[in-house]
Image (tube, rainbow, N blue to C red; front, side):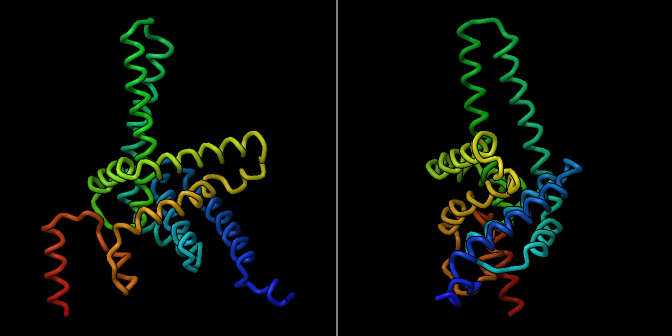
Amino acid sequence: MLSGLFNYDNPVWRFIGKFWDVLIVNLLWFICSIPIFTVGASTTAMYYVTLKLARDEDEYTIRSFFKSFKENFRQSTVIWLIFLLTGLLLAFDVYYFIRMAAHSTFRTVMISVFLAMVFIWMAMFTYVFPLQARFYNPVKRTIFNSFFMAVRHVFHTIGMLAVDVAILFLSVSYIPQLSIFGVALIAFFNSYMLNNVFSRYMPKREDPREMELRPLFADEEEAERKAEKAQTEE
């Protein structure tokens, strides 16, 4: 009985081990995000690891993080800057109409419109970096896919946003110890729902490498070129 309890393959120990990995990932995310413009690459790398943890795929956490950080740096940075600029613009618009605009029906309508846009922005932000970590696509298509999935899987989207808010609330109000896991804890819990969504778009193939390389909603011409290249190599 005791030997089973202290066995590393025991579900309890595996669960504890995952939280240790989450702690490490959060530290790596924080350090790599210090320059600010690298937040996108850090977030993509974080989700690359947490998505694997949620799928019970054992890999070296630090090595996997920096592998994704390096491979996705360029596209993730572009995506991050796009979302940063649009987020700041939306925040300014909401602030302006709440604090500075005169009270009127137009003001109420504009506040409602911009708050709805903020919700869409948050929903897309929840998907865009996990998509970058999981699938190979151009920046434009990755952003489109984040909108598509956020809308199509709206209940998953609302569920993830609710979990995110709950974790932040508990960290600030009741369980400050959760803050040591930082944003990686949010990514870890989101990854379970994200894997459930992503699995619907994965090909039914036995080779896991094909699953990693499959472009989500790729252009038909691009898919044909890759198919022709694969046949030539064979």
